[in-house]
Amino acid sequence: MNFRIFVAAAVSGLAVLGLVQPANAFPDRPVTMVVPFSAGGGTDITARTLAGPMAEALGSELLVKNTAGAGGTIGTAEVAAARTVGYTIGMMPVGPMTTQPHLRKLPYSPESFDYICLAYSAPSSIVVRKDSPFNSLADMVDYAKANPGKLNFGVQAIGSIPHVAGLGLVDATGIDIAFIPFKGSAPTFKAMLDGSVDMFVAHISFLTQNADQVKSIAMLSDEPVSTAPDLPTAKQQGVPLNFPIWGGLVAPKGIPAEARDTLESACEKGMNSKAFGDRMADLRMPVTFMKGSDFETFVQAEFARNAKLLAKAGLSN
Image (tube, helix red, strand yellow):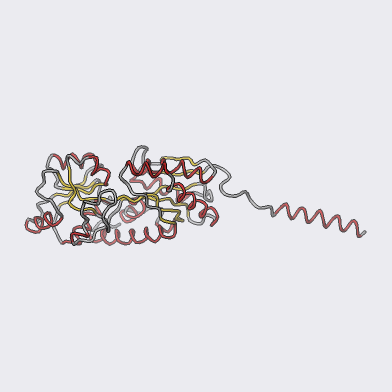
């Protein structure tokens, strides 16, 4: 009898052990990285550049998927709604995260995500034509104050970060300028060259690629830019404006801590890789890793600031 009881207990114990065997370590299958814009743009290039070394750090395939549309909000909503416990992440840029939710009702907010890392942050600049009489921010502001409503500020879209940066300029200086919306950077640039607009906000790589046609009157960053240290910042000229063009990795809210930590570590290793660093140097973009908790704080601050600027302009939903 005792022997039978012992055997039964042993079998029962083995069964229980079988039920509590640890799950496979994350990740045990490919991870999908959603990019909310079409292939070939800056966010997509950064995502694909990071995907290779990050996959190596994860020890698992990392698939890049483009889900474009509605200013990046369709892909962002897809990530917020994913239920794949860490196997769907997104390379989310500043617009869909911090301006679009203020312009219309969306099925997500910054609270809809767990934050993995800031993956890129490129300084922006107020640019004018090479032959513009404005050689500094003060030149432009002084003219605008003396001639209210005369200057045109081109924006790639209403509510875009270049537009919000322009709203920040108006808020900080009190100037009266007209915002002229276009559909993207290329037509905005063309309009400035033909004199339809006087200035617009551009990515630093645009500035370096078109240095024969444009010049910067202010970098919109707190500190001088490492890849262009000779270009003065708005802050150095007495107007504290900081409007980087950034993007980072997020996951749906509530993924396991192990998965989040593993993804954050892989992001850091990927960004520290030679392949990623070399590509960012080609694009004149500094490597700017930020861990998930700091990235979340950063996004919340950007979200709150942009809310105030858009509300003041009467553009909030």
